[in-house]
Every structure is written in structure tokens, then in C-alpha cells.
Length: 617
Image (cartoon, rainbow, N blue to C red; front, top):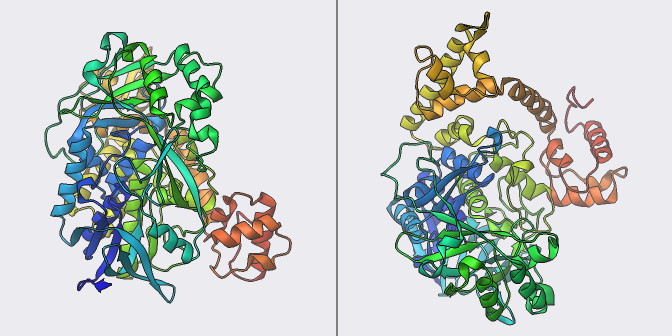
């Protein structure tokens, strides 16, 4: 084994969405960082759907951008079809989504990584972790190289003992065309980590020119949808259409007749798949009353004819896939360019991480992405950003960045991962957040940009722009509250008029152009939403305050739960494994009841670990 002559503050294993954000954050915080990947040609690769954003996922992308991450900017540089989802509903669930040019996204991310000072990108297959005295010391590769580092972020995606399934055919691989990582799984097990298996999948790709577009519903994009809070770096790409079609009863019968050939139903796949992104086999069997299922035909780029058939993820044999695709009217003569497949992989089960994403077992080792049991590019990127920031903070001797549930969807995501046992791949939804109206996608910069500025990931210029926006919104809110108009013989402030359900900033401005000024879409929206939802927002802020008082009840890492006999056995085991940092976090651990929390508070008070706050006395 040859030891590389340079050492690093951080080594990031894997250059997917989590790894890229982790490495960029650390390097931008001034630390020598190595991004180690099996193949330099797949940095930032979109392994499944070339889309970023969507329900709650769009919120995560905006938060990543607010903190100084890169996903939003790369999305805007490669977007070919953008939409704001859920506009018919309340602003808490509005979510930007973009179909990207797959190859352009990948190349754009790699180019940004290669240009970043302090960031070193190398090809190598990580085979083991070097740990001495319970602390991470470096990474061993199959090429016979030892890279030393003070911290490591493991973001291995679906590559840990990855196994691909297409019907009765199985082959080792982290994704189609790429070999798996076997040594890292063995290394983690030898260090005492508990691993399990999960499964995800991808649908077939078909040739655009072979689709009967006349049998589809056209879904145009909405030019102008933004992901980043910063000015566009370049003009947007041309927008392309997506298309909607549906399965048929013939489709469903083909699947039912061949279900025994699906490795999911024959028992060949051990891992559990994502409930909220099911295979077409699952859809047909779980929703037997549905006559058809909606499919989205999504182009993969401006320079390719490949189309992603969103909605028929499958692990059925290729001959069955062939019949399934051709049973759909718009795809009767479609040419399948790539078959669908399922991938099964190892992950580290819940309860082995701290809120900083550092592992309990090995100091200096952080985990991010699908290795933690999540699914989705956005969830991975969010974890990668936080893991990279906190690995850098550890080296610099700074406190970790831990976002609260009331502060960010990223806080909800990480809190769920460390407190709730996962029995399926985790996907973010707006319903997972208690304070959705506070955590809107449009105000992520107002909530989080100060953290990025403190870390050095947000520039003074960016922060000055935000402060100007904040001051302008506050000034205009105060002015509109004092500006009155006569309506039906009664006086109403412009704030009162704006709070009406049928009013928008644009419609009210058309009526009173001298009183409402155009400050740009972002500021206009903040003023409108503040007026409409002031009461609801105030109530949620009161709830946050009450919960934060419970969060202030800290628990020492060495606290012994097994000595508290009044705690249920399940609570003792779960709390000892998760090691919550405070009482609020303890209350969210699966299997811990309100009665257990009451017992725990009394025990903490008795041992003088804390002073019970008024809310808990």
C-alpha cells in the first residue's frame, strides 16, 4: 500500500449529488479537500430521472442555494422544462421543478468542481476506511493507495454491494454500466455499523421519434421559474415540452400475468422499495381499482432523442417490459433504448448518526445520501452540504451547523433520519414538516442565508442584497398598513385589501398603481403572502416558541437510559441507540411515548442534568 504524499482535511467518497455538495462546501470554507470517485466521467451524474425539484424537493433545492450550495445554479444552467407545482393550492406547498439536460447538468457540475480552489478531484475506488483509536484517519483504495485525512464523508449512493435486477437476470452494479463497491460495506461492518438492504428502480427510456405524440397530452413548461436566489449566470436554455399518457387495462393484464417473473415478487430482491415512488408492478397490485395510471414522457436533453417514461419503473424481464411499453397507445411503436431495472444496495440503518451527520462509532466519519436510507437527488445534496460543512467545522474547531425543524426542511430531513427508524427509502414531503407555512420555498433565503454567510459560503455582496430585500419588504408592509382606500363607503388599508382571498399583488397594483409599486416578483410575493397569512404565521411562530423551550432541555451524551427503570424497555433501547441531544429530539424517537418523556424529564431533573423549563414543569 502506497501512501499518497499529500494529506487532506476532508476526503469525500463518491461524486454524486451528496458528494459534490460536500466537497464544494469544505473547499469553499478554505480546507484542502479530496473528492474521490470511481469514474471521473460520472461526476454529478443523474442516475435516474434528469429532473430536480418537485413537492418538498424544490424546497430543499432553494434551501441548499440559500446556504451556499450549488444544485440550484447547476439546475438553472441545464433546465429545459420548468414548472411551479401546486399553484392551485396554498403557498406552503408551491414547489419548483425542472427537467434538465442530463449530460449538461453532469458536465456543468464537474466544471464547477474542477475550478474550485482547494478542491482536488481524483479517480479511485474506495475499498476501506482507515480508523485508529476510534478516529478516521484515511481511505484505502483498490488501486493500492492510502489517502490520509482528518475527516471523511461517505456518500456512496446505491453502490454499496449494489445488485441490478432485470427479471431473472442479476448482475453486480451500483447502476447500469458501473461496478459496485464491495469493500466499503465490509469495512463498515468490521467497524461495528449495522447495515441493511434497500431497493430503488428506474423506468425504460424510449426514442422520441418513435412516440405517437398525437396520442398524448402536451405539458408545456413555464419559462422564468427560478431555483437560485442569485441573478442568473447566463440566459436560460430553450424550453421543450413534456407529454402525458396513460397505462391501459391491457398493460395491467400483462403485468398480472407475469408478476411471478418480477424479482420483487419472486423473493429475489431482499431490499424494501420506496412506497411513494412504486414500481408499475406495485401500482397495479396495490391500486387494483384504478383503470389507468398516469405517465409522463420527459425528454432527457436537447441533443438526444432519449425520453424518460416516468411512471413505469420496473424490474420485470425485458420481454415483458417490451409488451408493457407497447400496450400504451402513444408507445405502440416505441423503440426502447434502455430497459428498466431495479438496484438493491446496502445502507446504514437509523440511529447511528448524530445531528451533524457524524457517526457515533467513528469520530470524524460523516455519512450523506442514500447510504443513510434516503432516496432522491435533493435529499442527498442537502445531506451532503450539511455533512461537508460539519466536517469542515470539526477540522476548524467550530460548532456544527444543526438546523432546527422549525427553520428548514433540511432540519426536518436530518432530524427524521436520526430519530425515526426507516423501513423504506426516505422521501421528503411537505407533510413531514410541522411548520409548513414558515418553511416556504420562496423565503428560504430569509430563513437561512445568514448561516451560509457566517460559514463563508455566501458573499458579502449576496448578503447585502438579501438585507436590502428584507428592509424593502418591511418598509412596504408598514406603508401599506397605513395607506387607506374607500370601498363601498368604508375605509380599508391596502394590507386588508391584499389579504382578501381573491386579491393578488398584481391585481391590486392594477387598481392602485400609484400606491403599489413593482419591486420585482420576489419582493412583491413576500409582501402579498405576509398580508394574506399574517395570522396563521403568528400562530405557527407561537408553536415554534413552545417547542423550542422543550428543545432547550439538553441531555448529556453519557446519560444512562437503562438506569431509569420507569422507562419502557423499548424506550431504553431506542434512546440509548439514537442518543438524542435534547428532550424535543427524544420525543420524536419512534417507540418513545409521551409517558416515557415525562419519566425522562423527572429523571433528568433528579440527576440535576438540567433545570426543567416552565413549559415542562
